[in-house]
Structures are given as C-alpha cells and as structure tokens.
Image (cartoon, rainbow, N blue to C red; front, side, top):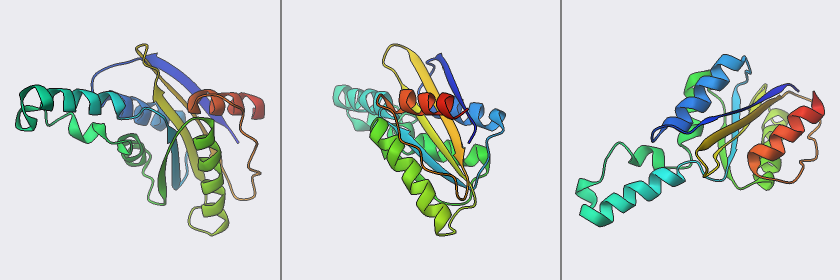
Length: 163
C-alpha cells in the first residue's frame, strides 16, 4: 500500500473535484476501481445552488453549480482523470466511510471486478481548505483497521502508518 495526503486553499465551485482529480493523476496512484469517502463533497455547491434558487427562482440559479452539488461529482472527475473503467463507489461519512471504502475495494478485488483499487478521502473543511488522502489496495492486501477522525484524517493517518 502506498499513498499520499495533500491540502490546498479552496477554490471555485466544482474546483474540489477538479483539484482532487489533478492531484491524483499527478500522483501515479493507479487502479481500475475507485472508492471515494467524503463528508462534504458537493455540500457547499448544493447550498449555493438552492440559495440562489430560493432567492430568484430555480430558473435563475447558476446551472453550472448543479452538477457539482452531487456527492458523486468528485468520484466521476477522479475516475475520468485516472482512466478508471471498473467499479466506482462514493461513500458518505468520516472514518466509517473510509472503512467501508476499503471493505468494498477488497470485496471487488476478491470477486475479480477490479485488479487494484484506489481508495480516496476528499473533503472541504469549511475553513477555506480542501484536503485529500489516497492509497491503493491490491489483491490479497489486508484491509487495515481505520483510525478515528474525518474521512481525510483517518485515511491520512492510515497512509502514514502503513508507509
């Protein structure tokens, strides 16, 4: 298992997914299955889209915000950037979502649905920062116990522990 942990200042709507996809593409992490744990992906964009809709009517809300308001947006952007053509899963929560992402990756590997899984935690922290942690899981790799914390904190601690 190898991985990475990164943080960056938050940017424009939809930027979290694009930033995560670019960072992962540059990292060299590879697999044909993708498992993304997140607590807030799409949250800020959803709030802004519906705030605009309530203020002026949905017909006048910025349509560019809507696709990014979905929690699966980072998963789709990352899958495209990495060329992933196997299973993709988005799991919502903190450390529990990371544990489930690792378990789902192991299940897909064991069933032959994927040869290698990229497990990612990505979130906006609400204080103007984006954060990301990622690792790979291969056939026969043990599924490690996940430490407590947010999704990114838990996976980042796990990456450091296993390095």
